[in-house]
Image (cartoon, rainbow, N blue to C red; front, side):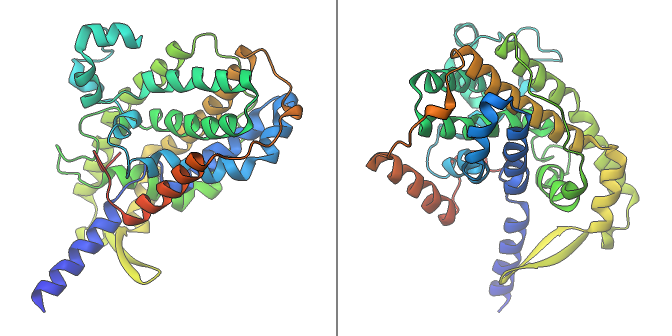
Length: 322
């Protein structure tokens, strides 16, 4: 009986600390609202396909259950490269490989470089006028751009495991948006043309890295001041009881962050729309109203089915807390 109870407790803790980046809520919301930042020439096409972009916003997280190369695409441990602003880290991939080696880069995360790679793939998809590729790559790049806006995706202390704050990753980027996201202000204006996508995404990750200390230190101080017996609560999700940060603790943390999570989601939404817009302009502004439905190949269908199967099986390959 004792063994069964112990296993049940471990299962509860695992469920409550497992993280899928911004969480399904956050990623889906970011991609969905980014559609409405687009100019009229793009808006009709993206709006007609908004459910695909919303649903598939989490495909990269699902891919982490199947492909070992996927995990590093979601983060970069910048503090492994010295001190802010990490001037010794080349912003161009080939230069970075020459300086550090590809193995080192992958070991510490490659999100800013991978966002730029995905950008040019999206440009090519627009040039080809391939509807499925445009939608698939738009959904994917939206995910990686959103991840780059998360401070804990830019540090080796990604889950507070080095400071006795294990679980903060899910707390900041999943629990808080799920509790308060419906009341965030998502009016972010119109997508803007990005002059240099590499410089843009590097500015994003450097900003995120500069916010790591606040994310951790504010929670650390709150934890020391808050009654221990009120820090966590339990919620019923289907047939499973999960341990979560209590609403009282979550509210206080959100208040002390002074709107940080909302600001980061707003910035991510505008960035996603701007990347989509810039890719379309770079491709020559193809007429999206003439795109024809492309029947998915057997391999495409198999890949999408496999993502769901691996995700439901629940075993991540690589770093779990990203």
